[in-house]
Length: 175
Image (cartoon, rainbow, N blue to C red; front, side, top):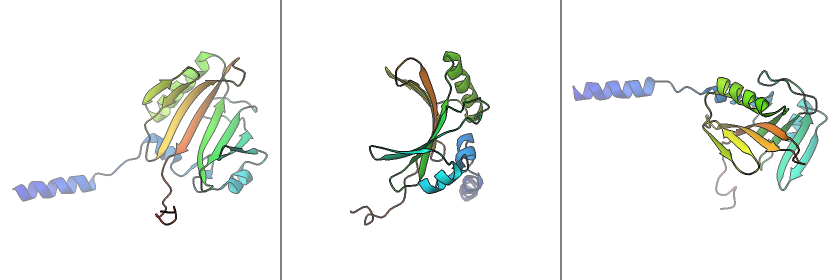
């Protein structure tokens, strides 16, 4: 009898499929058609006319893009900001949304909770409000409210980031 229960338990555990959450279902292979393995030149071909920036070793590519995202209107002044890891492959994206008062942030937060599930936590400091969703199969999503450069208004930024380490041997890393 013990053996039958053990075999049934193993069978149930082994045959229960693992399901990805809504975040990795949507972003597991790409964002805006940019694959996680794409390099800067590939992104530039897909999104021409942007600006490359090197911010203290973090390579970014910013392009103005007013497409609707999450069924939320954006303007041609809003940017999509692609970021790259240390080996030059696509690591994450920031999507700017227009700020039209506190209700615009609340509405976007509600939309994200609707499609991605309840957010995990909020972190606030003097300058920003950061809302996080649970990391889903290596994909991390955040919504950030931060003051504009001159502090007269706010920027809303949605961040999608792949937080899976790149495989490398000790020798490749110099150890």
